[in-house]
Amino acid sequence: MRMSVARTRGAAASRVSVNLLWCIPSKVGGSEEYLVRQLLGLAEIEPDMPVTLYVLPAFAEAHPELGATFDIQVAPIDGASRFRRVIAEHFWLARRTRGSRLVHYGGGTVPARGVGPVVLTIHDLQYLTYPQYFGRIKRAYLNWAMPRSAARADVIAVPTEFVRQTVLEAYRVRADHVVVVPHGLEPAIGLHATDEATLRARYALGTGAIVVLPAITHPHKGHQFLLNLMADYWTDPTLRLVFVGGKGLADEAVAESIARLGLADRVVRTGRVSSADRDGLIKMADAMVFPSEYEGFGAPIIEAMAIGTPVICADRTCLPEVAGNAALVLPLELAAWSPALDTVRAQRAEMIQAGSLRAAQFTSATSARALLVAYDLAAS
Image (cartoon, rainbow, N blue to C red; front, top):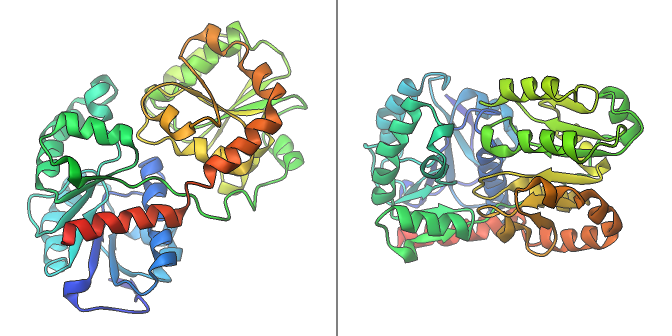
């Protein structure tokens, strides 16, 4: 099924094929935004480059902006069954990408069938650091598939130097073929943010200050840490902690902790919201708080900086690398976070300025240029 046709097509030998069959909209976290922003940056800097995206029907519907530039090929599956998706990659995708200049696999693994050259995006190796956060079947699959995929790839694209080093430590791959392709932000981020008065009414936020964590309730994201912080240190009764994002593996535990700690009137759970509401909530917050144990990049840090909100984040994995000197970076200890709100309030203007400069280094065009380096390396 063809959704749209690129403005310019090259011969098959010059075409770049991008496998996005792994990407079920709203189900894969930040990796979806990472690849979408990268591709939009590619359209910006190389509008005539022949690229074909292989996607699920839901992805094509969720991202019509990609169809304005790229050839979109929609797979005859809905993606609900991992087994059917893998079969589609091995046969349907393998047939259609034969003869491509290269094939870019954006989801961390490469199917056994198919031809090269291959660019593989590895977002992180969390399954090695925190195996307990993965189900038995998924953990077994990743332990089997990831090393084989890394070995098969001609070039591996990673979002940070932290992930690059973990890949080099975990797999026997050439160091000069593991390339950092950072996240990039679209220029319009935050421009259509919902106004504060509307958000306060819509989500019953009261009149006091708010802090925001935009993250799915996965165990490593730090929701529980913030709940303990609210109970023991951030005890201002007018302060609201706002959790923005869908339900993850720790969702039930988060709900139980809110009740047990007596925080039902000070913690607001919005669930998934529109991008306008999400940007508006971050914009009105005293701080975007991000106490994550593990990230491959941590895009909310740069997003908040671009919107103009101070950031408080953990000193784990890649977060200090991404934040630079533009955030308050702290160890994951409650006592260390206790005075953090007072600190960012006192330094708000300076932190906003530093954050704006930092975010300007992470554009979708910059991300796309780094991706082109990976493509050229793989095709050479």
